[in-house]
Image (cartoon, rainbow, N blue to C red; front, top):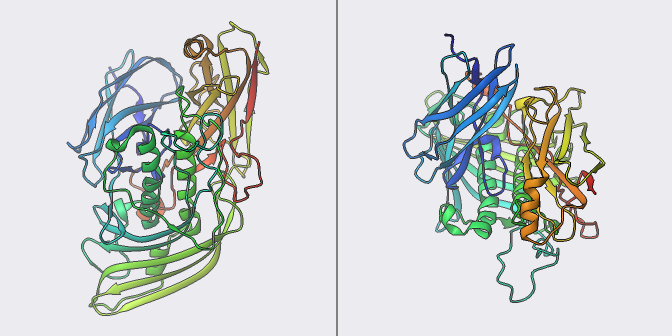
Length: 509
């Protein structure tokens, strides 16, 4: 029999399970112990496949402990891609790019194997030297300062949307810091001759590693508030430096949700990652300051480059929101330190977020009769060129919030896989569905009713689908993990209303 035409075609990506967000470019960092190894497995044939099983066979790093799980699908349509995820413990993982092996089978075929790499970094904060250090196989990035706008005092709500009362023992969910500047230095391992050094993992720009550091810094506070300090390395509790010219980030989020437990982890995590990715916008997608600095500084033939510094600062013309072409005015200076001299290059320019959508089209039923069984939501994410994101282009999820001020949030994946309530695979329509009978069990325990106005919140992040083997300088220009749609927005204006907004409503009668 032939091998099953099923394959994981691109690099698996990391999802933080408490906040549900993908880490920048899908990179795993062992500062966060629990991460989901997430991948899309695609039916590469022109026919539907039946009785499909998929499991993760092994990870090439013995320090990564994966919770075993086999996924079963009654059918995967032709060309369809299903999302599969395994919980991994990365506490003992080593910085590197280990191989991950997936095995898939279908009725009438023998098993097929897909092998892909994942990227693992190690972020720590040196409390003595007051700097972040992020290790990769090609070297380490040291960040001595990340200046940022701090969150406003209204960020921490209680379950009614108000600030925590005096004496409350509730752990506040920390608000996002919006980076406005960074001082970083790259130490290649080993020092290199010539004009260009190796890219981290031979793939992303150096700035992506800086974004990982900022995201880790943003997420550890959220994780600590939700699950305690035992789920991440104690050596990652560094702080952002407050921008003295900054306004506050106003993100009051009444009862924003993250699960049926009514916590705020997802909204806080989404905000933290959206703000962290602002570093990428300021430092350009096409080529980052270190690469551009290398392009414009040529060392002598007998010199070795031992480190490269970037000091960057930028101003926002508008808040850095998902899917919006916001602009920054950035100034940065690059220094190449060699065994014989220091070479410098300066830039003053405007940069614009290119990870945008022209519009997000959302369709839900206006009314669902009690007992009908399902709530559903469909979403299309249209690019500026008029085409749609489709299938494995996006990692997407949806929250259905039950009626009333104390309503619960139910997370469901938003998928374009041609299964269940999704009519056709890879057609650009992503679908989520909630079983009302299951939801009612949770609502009944809280004394809540399913009848009334349900609200729908949708989030979407780009997946890095660069084919393995792409030339490093080309691969580096694609960055995954950027939010192109979000139900929460950032504002610097405290007079504006709360920026957590549902994108649709469903009335259950």
